Image (cartoon, rainbow over all chains, first blue to last red; front, side):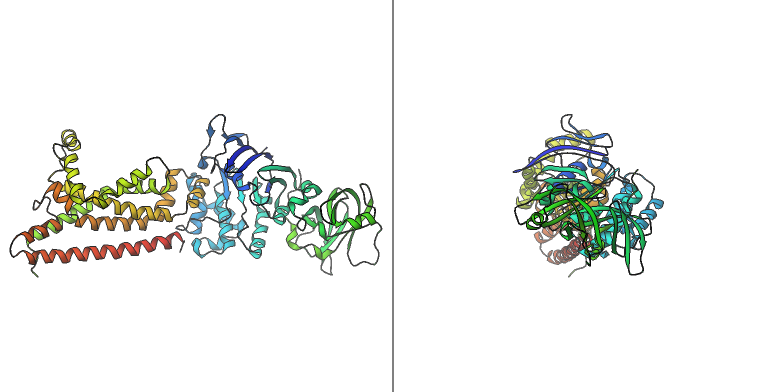
Length: 366
Length: 231
């Protein structure tokens, strides 16, 4: 395991009591604000000491309360990208980027060029932090952390302080980062669309405890987590491959359960993608609908139905090897007599999938 | 106004020398104390803060007398310094520098402390995660950001040291050429008939130095704000 955490910390009335292991890839720490996410990453970074427990990265123990052992922050080799960029105001972008390399005695220029290219910050090198936009500053902060050659990168809500266009400007860079560096990342967020786009593994925190931990595909399609994810935000991800682009502006994707037509996606044929399908955008039919405008009608099987307090239910549907969620009314579920094992069709409008819900740069599974 | 006589010139030169060494010697300790007060929580912090500010409140003559008791030839520290290193402070210009340094210390610490408090500790945290040790963080992040504040404090301290009178005259007396600084010389000129002219010249010089120091330190303090904002 890349990262192994088992820590407890009391902060006033709040009790953090968390144990999880994170494999390689991007592990998202997901939870509402106040669920203890930042305390947890600070404990991993060494910025705050837990009351007891243990933290280990790639087999090296960084903190062990019982042994009285704690590696100081600067010796942990853990990069940290904060919510605010925290660039050094007295240094230009180039010297900000090289700060960690100088501190660790690493030589510079080749790595600098590579990271500057990866993050699209090469034109900014001579600027002062005060002359950067929020999105540019955050990309520089990411580059600065990468260049210190960490063995693990912590990102604490790195996009939360940015507006939507800036977020969408940075997300593709994070996807490239995931695809090209293979650096393990612990990504803290309370934004499900970011998590769905970036995470390969998810740890769900609630009130200082781990509610559930597992692969992104499994957790995003878990109906029991919908109350944490939020009804309007809940949605599963489908792994897809670009089959072709059509003349009328649609892109055809291959998924395990059939074919998906979406508005044109800017990716090469054969590219692997991940598509987030919001539960509230999925219609369930027990017979194949004819003469319907929705282009995507996929054969499915009901795997679970979960009732909440309101008039709605969440149905988990098996589509090929993947699972998706559908949010429908209890009345519809009763009318259609949906229960575990019912054969049905999942109906999805092409235009319901936003381009920001399509994730690129996935590594092929080993 | 008379032109400056040799005695008055001597006083100006001596004042500059005393103030320069007083400021230079107080600087490292001033930065260390300011950092402690601004960034570290420790028992006795309030006491240290009080001790630093004491010379500002205490009658200068009391500070001078305490220095005489401690650092005079018969005093415990003074006797030890004399025996071990052959250093004598009482009635020497070095003693004037010590008195001036102690009187200027609160101003120095105050200016540096304000500058340190204006530096976001989050920047220092970020530097640590990038692999910088505490010393390196201080040298490469904190110090460059507070530099204008340090210089502002040094200028204030220098001006204060130039004008120190009470503690100096009590500790090292008023010996022309050895311990007679500008204020002591003004005092001496005013004691003799016809000395007002020379005294007035020195008064004007003091005023000019003090005003210049205040303006310069104000300007540098504003530079701190701009620097921390990354402009």
